[in-house]
Image (cartoon, rainbow over all chains, first blue to last red; front, side, top):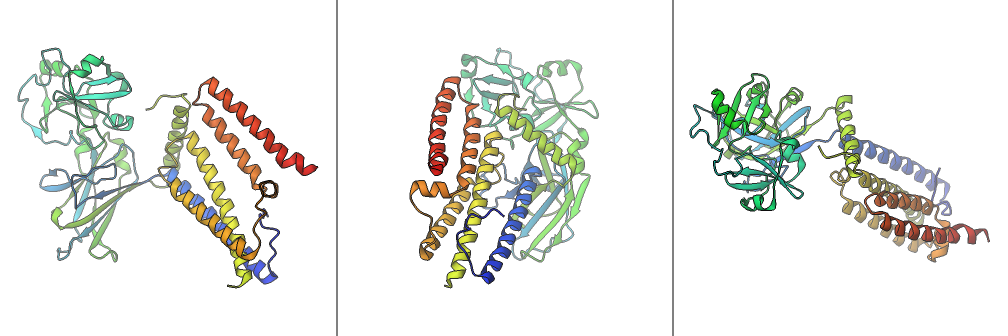
Length: 326
Length: 130
């Protein structure tokens, strides 16, 4: 066997021990390699609810945004498809048992999950008459892509965010420096941001149009009004993505103390468009939660590994200029 | 401590070092081809700190037991078979880096690398034969 220290001779008994330990070392190396390959080929994502500073945000933040029919909603943003969602909640002291509480999950777009409003308030809103760009318009200048939001432009932080919101590159309008200069530059547009006012959604399953206005979703049924909004290509979405069809029931863990967890198979959510995994907590007061961790993981199967290998191949081609980013 | 134990630990640390270097160079090559894929899962800083700690352990035990390699540059290079692996890894990394450079920079780097490799070759094999 390849030995870099042949010149150092041990007594026979110690040489035997050394050989055994060496085999253990190689075994651990191989096991570590397999585990690392597993982590790369089937990557999981972990999200944590920050209970001390709710203003912090990152790609690993579990947000406690909004509510749905009285139930608290936790949001995890990712444009990837997963097999299993595992949620662990550590309750604060003296909290009544959370065992048996139901957790439900859906995957949609944050803005599409807004409550449905009765009618358009200021039609045809978001279509300015002065020639400036309407809300939701995608502009490019230099290496950046911007979205127009209420008279400001927000640059996308990366192409993943852009694509995770269902936008398409061929809808981006090249802008001049003067055109971009008309707008105040706002903070980065990150994956946890909802679609801006003026965004039109088209449901793939029911062929309905909805426009976003002031944290509300409005159905557009009038063809004339629709025409004014369809200056931008609508974002495809699924009406069924709003249903909470998947759920699990919290069970108490032995460790850590006061911790509860449950696991939901989320493979069926892959067919829905959206970047927002929303978890509805059945009658759980968020004040009683000391910590919440969500892990979205993939099962070992050929389909999942093929997706990752395809992604690696694409990124390698992009690196050598042989393909364009998604 | 028993000298035999120290020598055994020395030998094991050397094995750990060779495996760590193998991992390090494979990671560097993969990171060069697909930037961000490895570094999002593995901290290069931690790996380098680990390698430095292992080398320090080898140096300490080697000196204590008088089994330290000849420290002179020529001797240590000639005795160390791992140098061939390091040279191959370095060539792969340099070639990979050239893809993102212009032809003029590439030409200068290729010439400089060829020059250095020629002297490495002289140092490692020609002088050894003599």
